[in-house]
Image (cartoon, rainbow, N blue to C red; front, side, top):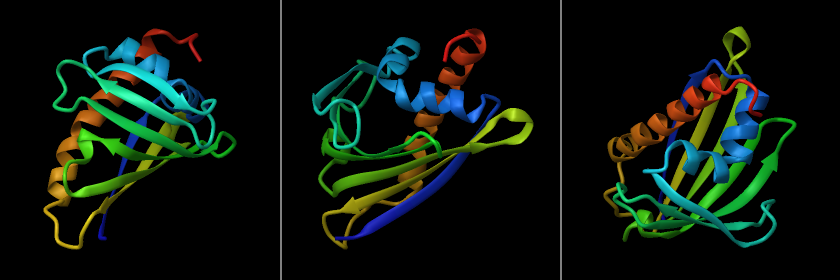
Length: 160
C-alpha cells in the first residue's frame, strides 16, 4: 500500500471558532443549505456525531460521484482540529483504499483564520496513478464550497 499526501491552506476573514463551528461541527446542516447542488444529504449511520461516527454523504445531481462514507477520527474543539477518513464510496475509485484528512483552523490575520488541510490518499498498491495534479483538481472544487460557506457567514453575521 502506498500513500500520497497533499497539503493546502485557505485564508479566511472569519474567526477560527466561528469557522470551526459552522464549517466543521455543523457542516452536515450548513453545506447542503448553502451549496445544495454539491451535496444532497448527510446522514449518520453509526454513532452520535462524535468520534467513531460513520456518516453517509450523498452528493448532488451535478457531482461526478454518488456517495461517500466518512468516519470521524478526532474532534478537538479547543484546538479547532478535526480528523476524518473517507472509508467507502465511488470517490475512492479502484486504486484508493481510504483518504485521511486533518483539518486545522488557526488564527489568521486581522481576526480571521488560516485553514490547513492535510489529505493522505492510501492506495491499494504501490503502483497507482494518483498524482498531486489530480488531487489539486478536486481541491479546487472544495475551495469553491469553502468560499460559498464563507460568503454565507458574511451575509449572516449572527449565525454561529
